[in-house]
Length: 263
Image 1: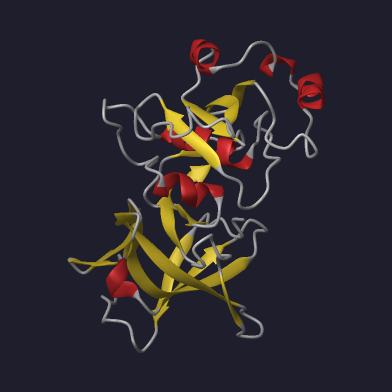
Image 2: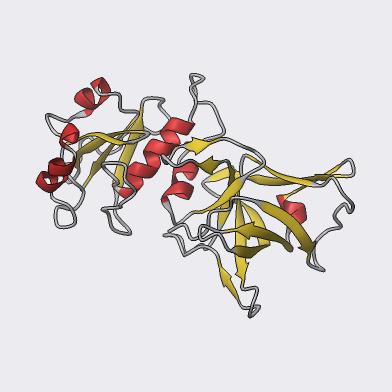
């Protein structure tokens, strides 16, 4: 789960092991793709240069927080994405802890994403504001799958809506209210209109079509992922728009960008 959303930041110092950073006024820290860029004095330092740097942030609770970049390395599944080993530092006690929980590979890593979430849960792009995502959470997984909110798809489409749809899908957040109805370790088969992901289980009887997804959540639901967590009948009582026949064709007609099958 994402534990911290950064709304604002300022570079406050570099550990002894970090490379030299520019000093003086006018420094700015932005995020380009999954990479920090510190610009000052005509120089640009990127994430790899900032290993050991501490960042002062503001968390979801509005309180100051500090995170440190302890290591940076390419993601094996997507080398263009740089995985950051983030550590949180308690200002009062100095105690440290990993920012991210372990993912299925045992990694406790993440990376920054430029932008912020508005009150409606939509991503607002802004390179000067960023938030960290973890590979253990929906926001990080969706980028590792190729839904980069900062990029264009193979046909020139903006991928930010697909990113938003993917986050709802991973969480099984059918009505888009932010409540997840899934379990860790669940297998899902994902594909999309852009062709970034393609289905793998069409001939596997263990999987069945679950839902079509858009930026606000599901557009229709054939079956919920875990009936014991949320029966479809209960979901449709609060969100009747998700009812009716639901397969890939029906979901496409309703405007779905992503589709999934689950066990």
